[in-house]
Image 1: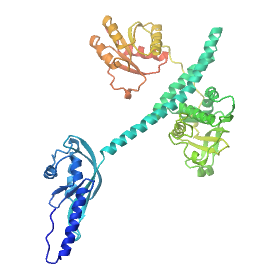
Image 2: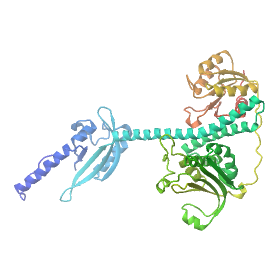
Image 3: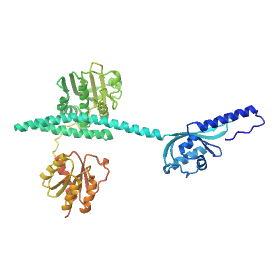
Image 4: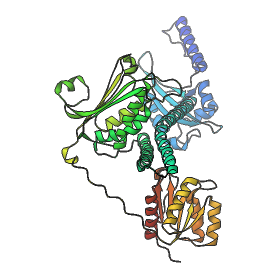
Length: 524
């Protein structure tokens, strides 16, 4: 930047002052640790030292190519962004927070944010545009790492919550299984004990499905549900959650039907009971109530979000430690917990709140320190047309067997044994492999009418196994078994492929195999 010449009206003192100000500005412009670019009225450009360091290029290269579309620092995916910036600077526009990227001479990509400010001279004329740049690369990288750390922490807490719920379910399974083992030695097994094992196992399956729905915001399976019957059905597990020092009182009014997801209602009740039990370490009284209530307009005005009318009330009360106002205000926040390290995840009540909202209901908590806690859930009463007498559910027809040859590939011993037993009982000619290499050896020796395979296994995935087997046995139908959903698998199903989700009931195994056989018959 050159010093201005002195006019006839200016004194030497004025000239010196201007020169001093200009020198200070030039020193500030060069030394400030913020990348800055000045664009003059003739589109000439001046880059300060911080800007040169940001671009990683010399001043001559930057100034000679600064307004060229094909400048070497412009990434291929940023041409439009740079063209818009050139247009805005040429028009003297004020812009803030414009995001773009540049490529250094070393090939390193930097993510940048820029703001352009028109320079207005003392006389009101334009002095060009000054652009201030901020290198966001390191900050974005740290933010990404922080988000990843938060995600991993959330996954860890979620795993703890899953373990908590599964331990409750497994307690019922193991307990009744021990009863069955004891009774079988005496030669008199109680069928009710076996029914409890099956019920608890199905509840575990529902839990995994609900966790998936919670994470992916999937739609719930809505149906008309009798709330009292549902609560009564989970009472055996609820009673096992409470030690003998806690007295349980239950008041259930029949005929209280709402439209919601049955397994979510069970999850709500279980989580509220778990919290109530935890709040009474020295014992106390737990009360579960289900009944019909008619909320009037006064209730609607004092309970935000509540709608007057007939509702089903689900109340869970305890005589435990209670909560103060600050705790009550936060209990439905995800990951908020008052329990010690490793004792709670803070997800239970957040999931309860989300489930109640999905059911178009509301939940309220009443608690005082030392006086226990009551959770009240109000659910809108179902349309009477949806709540007729329960219909008899037809038992699925027994699966049809056959004599075709099947190659079963499954590395998990328990799943492999179950599927083997089912298919052999149905009369199929079954060959079993525990690893892909074993499956290839069996397929080299004989022809198969169907492959039943796991997806995630040692050596290679199920889709890779199927592709290799089809090289020697073209058109081989395949039934893939996986605990993953179709969207989570990294391959597409072919026209002769089927996918079934674990866990599978024995009848389901027979059905899907027969269905694949009938849809894709093979000629030898």
